Image (cartoon, rainbow, N blue to C red; front, side):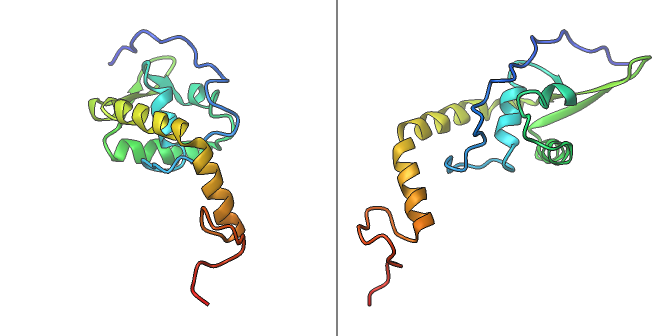
Length: 142
């Protein structure tokens, strides 16, 4: 029987901006929620219910699918604890922990280019290319 490790402090419900995960971040690892789950696990193992606190917009189904994908890809380990209070915890594997540095770099890059990303997304939604003053041009020659 495996004994649970000491628990890290509770996750802050406000650890992510309310608009997270932002569609402006051009980097994807796994699905939409994967990088946020990795961040939740960076200080130690967490139970499913703990992960839902800062990820309040995620459905139970999406969280389950994301955790299974991260486990399948070798980034997260799932451990079941037996006993009167059966429980399951998720923790970063060494491979998953190795992603935290590149995630930090991606977040810093996104912060540095936030305004450009917003402009590019708005231009894309309007049907224009970034820097195109015509607003509705498809970008094709007439």
